[in-house]
Every structure is written in C-alpha cells, then in structure tokens.
Picture 1: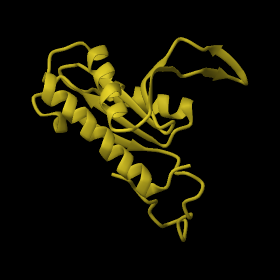
Picture 2: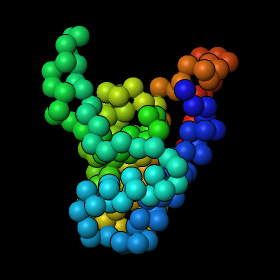
Picture 3: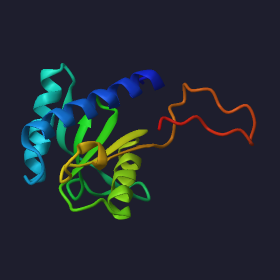
Picture 4: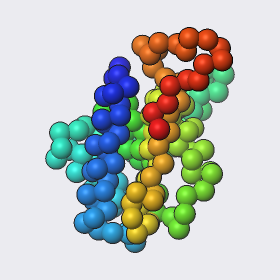
Length: 148
C-alpha cells in the first residue's frame, strides 16, 4: 500500500501525463484516444497502468456482472482514472468515479474531462477510505486528513 505522499506524487504524475497528452491533441477527440495516449505517456514515464479494467459488481456476496462496468485507467494498481470528453462534468460523472473507487476498493480517483481548453479546468480529484496505515484522528471531533 502506498503512503499519502506516494499517492500525492503519483496523482501529480498522472495529471502531468494527461496534460502532456492534452497539449499534444487539445480538445475534441474521442475518449478512447485520450485513454490510449495517457496510458502510453504513463508508460514512457515508467508508470504502470491498465486500460478498461472490469469493476466487478457484487450483490449479497455474488458477482452480478464482471463486464458491465470498466475503469478507464487503473494506475499502479491504486488510482482510478476516469476520462471524459463532455461539454462539462456533471454530478453523475463524479458519482461514477466514486462508485468505481468503491467497487475496486481504491482510495484515490481522478476524473479528467479532456473536452476543455485548459485541462486544469477539467480535473477533479477525490479520496475515500484512507488506507489503514494512516493514524486515526485524535478524537471523534477531529477532521480527517485530506489529499485535496
């Protein structure tokens, strides 16, 4: 399991790779083009990723469908990356990323909309279920640590 600092560095590297791809192509292409190019850019940087990773859906202990939902990119087996090419991100896009994070038991996710002029305007980062190695808050009233 990666530390908070390692996850922060990794998410920064993923964002840098996506920005490099966006500088090359700009907005207007299909999602799968940005996905393939981002995976290639990550590989060039020595970062492993998998494309179209099945997000198994379980219901009461049984797998319902292994192929129904797919994570666009799973980076270093710990970061869920969902790519979009939409006019603007909607709450449902963020909910999808959150659901994929829960289904895959990952604590860090990026939602990247490539259909923007400046990619920084299309990036949303999200953290859930901090890894067990992080210390618990000192009291019930303490705020939980945050990545963003």
